[in-house]
Image: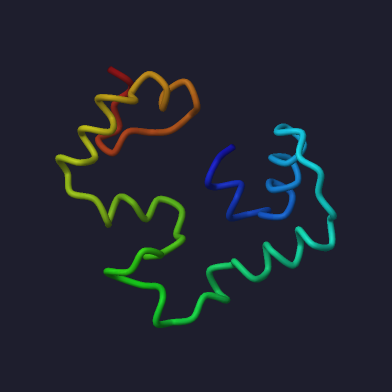
Length: 95
């Protein structure tokens, strides 16, 4: 599951997740849950800088994390990230 796909096609990705986990679901109820939890529907006082839900921009972590945090993630997950097509901030590949 990729965050990019979750943002593009949330309902489809949630249906896929339920299928993979062999969880029963009702598509209408799932659609309502997805709509209710959409970033756009979260009250303004519960999202934004300094809140638990900061933003939903794909790649927004590049602006939210410190360089040393990014390096730590890339060093720890480098091979996994490379195998799954994620580019490193500095443009280099896995560890």
